[in-house]
Amino acid sequence: MAAPFPVVFVGADSGSWRIQRCDAVVGEGLPQAARLNVLPTREPLLPANPAFILRGSTGHVRYVEQTEKLDLAKVTPPLARPEASCGALIPIRKSDAWWELPQDQRRAILEQRSRHISLGLAYLPAVARRLYHARELGEPFDFLTWFEYAPEHASAFEELVAALRASEEWRYVEREVDLRLVRDD
Amino acid sequence: MAAPFPVVFVGADSGSWRIQRCDAVVGEGLPQAARLNVLPTREPLLPANPAFILRGSTGHVRYVEQTEKLDLAKVTPPLARPEASCGALIPIRKSDAWWELPQDQRRAILEQRSRHISLGLAYLPAVARRLYHARELGEPFDFLTWFEYAPEHASAFEELVAALRASEEWRYVEREVDLRLVRDD
Image (cartoon, rainbow over all chains, first blue to last red; front, side):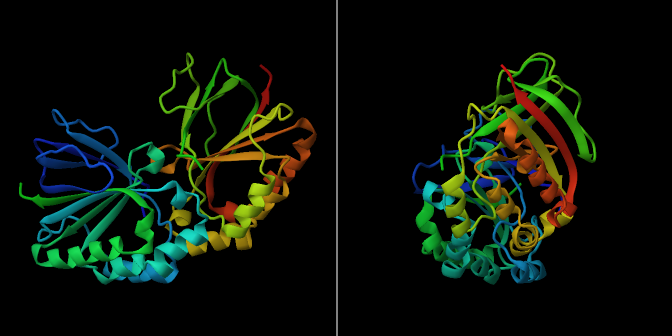
């Protein structure tokens, strides 16, 4: 794993990804934009008239344990596969109650009781993922979760999202926006 | 726990804390400065001619478990106690080998084998502490560790620092600077 690297997601009139939908799942949504830019730098040159700007950083794993890490490594694909023309950006903020929990209780909710890691694993390599952390950057969301998949795996992706939203972990989600994207440039 | 809050440490000619020593413990040191400012905001008004600027953010606990959290809460003092006129700022960066470890292996090294949490607990309430995270902010250090104690606990603080530096966890420290401070304004 290299050093953490930054990302800036910008909703604007131009950008590599067309925004198909932008739904407020829990709490406040995001301003409407036609397209999404994914800019892999901390201080990017911004497009004109951005509708929203979301900043994040990759980081080390917070809950994944040794055997899970090995299992994930076997099936995790790279991003930007040519066939993966569908994307999703799902920014999430969790409640103070979540962040006040000690590490062992968060792990128990996230994996033992919500199967978050196992669920994601079951949809690999079809659904490629990347997690960006944003909470300690002073951003409005804690995480910017990113997904890429081929059109034929769209229903599998809906299953994954539905399973996570039905989990105990998701009771701690106090803001969630769901942007669905198509890469067409 | 409130939302994470930022800090900017600035070495300069003015500031609330006088810098007594600034030692490079592992790797590169920091430029010399007479005094240290502790500015609790993300974009502060900076003093003139800063020698160095280090940014961080508080965050949630990464390794502390339920019983440890309760034990810590019982004896953790606030910062800025009038008698705690001694301070230390110890910025630390760990190696890629550390960050590549899964959560359970980092926890095992940090607490089961290095007793990091228990050691800190043993010196509470004498040595007040605050941990700022900096890695995902793109900073040169991963952590900015902050300590405050009264002059009569100076030797206890040296014991604590020596015990941590002798631990297995510290083999993963690839840069460490140790600034000792006196609050005299």
